[in-house]
Amino acid sequence: MANFVRKGKGGLPAVSTASLPDIIFMLLFFFMVTTVMRETSINVKIHVPGATEIKKLEKKSLVSFIYIGQPKNSSKYGTEPRIQLNDSYAKVTDIRDYITSEREKMDEKERPFMTTSLKVDEDTRMGIVTDVKQALRKSSALKINYSTRKVDDVY
Amino acid sequence: MAKRNNVEVNAASMADIAFLLLIFFLVTTTMDIDTGLSRKLPPMPDNQDQVDDQNEIKERNVFVVLIDQQDRLMVEGRQMDIRGLREKAKEFIANPENRENLPEKIEKDIPFFGKVMVSKGIISLQNDNGTSYGMYIKVQNELAAAYNELRDDLALTKFGRKFDNLNEEQGKAIRKVYPQVISEAEPKNIGG
Image (cartoon, rainbow over all chains, first blue to last red; front, side, top):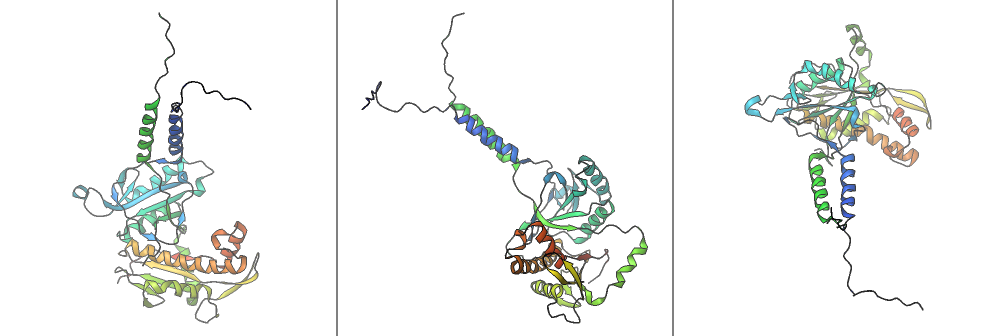
C-alpha cells in the first residue's frame, strides 16, 4: 500500500477563478456572432398581424424591409400611416430607388433570391399597401413576405 | 531597478468586466427570427394587351374572394364569415366529387403519383383600398391554411409524414398535385 502523506494543513485550496473571464468571453463572442445589430430605428408604430401558416425568413442578408404604420411622433408627423425605408419616411415613388440600391448591395448570384419583407401595422388600410405592392412589381422585386406573428388561432 | 517578484494580478474582477460587456450586447442586439407569409407578386404586364386574356378562364374555375372596406367577406357571390372560408376553399381546390360547378381537372403525370387529376382552379382575391391589413392577412392565412391542410392530408396518406417533413422531391410532387394559385386582381375600388 502506498502511503499518501498530506502536506501542510488541511482545508481547501482557493479555487482559481482565472479561467472564469475566458468562459464569459466565450459566451460574449457567441452572442456577438449569432445576433444582428439593430440597424434601423423604427419610427412608425407597428403591431404586425398574427397568422398560423407562417414560414421563417431564411437569410437575413437577402431581405430588405419596408415599414408601414402610424408615425411614432404623431404630434409632429400626424397620424396618417407612413412608409419608412432605412431611417426616414419615404413616398411610394422612393421605393424604386430603394430596391435598386438594396439590389446593388448584394452579390450578383444572390440577386434573384432577394426578398422584400413588408412590416405593416394591423390597422393600416390596404390602399397604401397596394400602392407599395404595385411599386415593387414595377421594380421587379416580386418575392415578398408579409411579416406576421405566430399565433395559435387567428379568430 | 530592483528586481521584483512576479506578483499575481488578481483576475477576479475580469469576470465582472466581461459580464458587463455580455449584458451590453444582450440588450443591444435582436434575436428575433422574422416570420411571415411568403408570396410572389405577378410581374408587371409589359403592355396593356395582355390584360384581356384573363377573361378566357371559365367562371367555374375561379373562386372569387372579395373583402370590402368594412372588412366584410364575400365568397363566390355570397357574404360569409371568415371561419367558413377555409372549408369552402378546401372544397373548391380538391373538388372531391367532381361537381359541375367546381373547377375542372386536367390529367397530369407526376412523379410518385403517376397520372393524377389536377384541378384548374384559381383563387382570385380582391380587396378594397379601405380594407384593413389585419383582415387581408387573415384571409391570406385562411387560404394558405386550406392548401396546407390538403397537402398535409395527401402527404400523410402517401408518405406517412407531414408536408413540411418531406424531402425536396416529394414536396415538389405534392405541390404539383395541389398547386397554390392565388391571384390578386389589379387594384381597383370595389366599393361597399
